Length: 101
Image 1 (cartoon, rainbow, N blue to C red):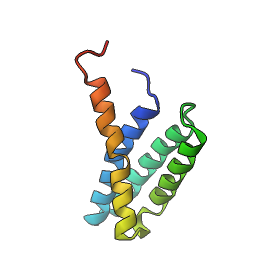
Image 2: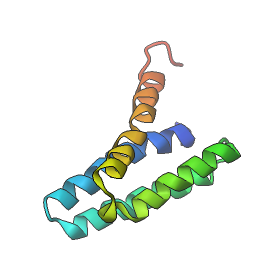
Image 3: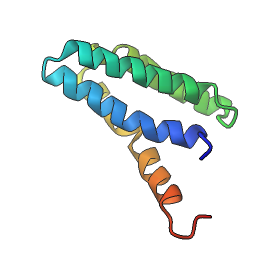
């Protein structure tokens, strides 16, 4: 399977979830490791050729949220936690489809 931008966007969702789950349970090192993985995924998204300039700006804002994940207020955190979710569902719908060749 080709690892396109949708693949990376879908994989960002669980990393963000892990990042906050570890943070909430006081596992700071594990939370920081999840942050590093999320930032690695972000680099793949931002370097993807199929991301348009406006989309690149939007993803850059999300990257900034990830960089400061432990300083976000509740509203900012909810934005970050929910942002990548639709991409995960879309990826599963596209690649788990029985009609996919």
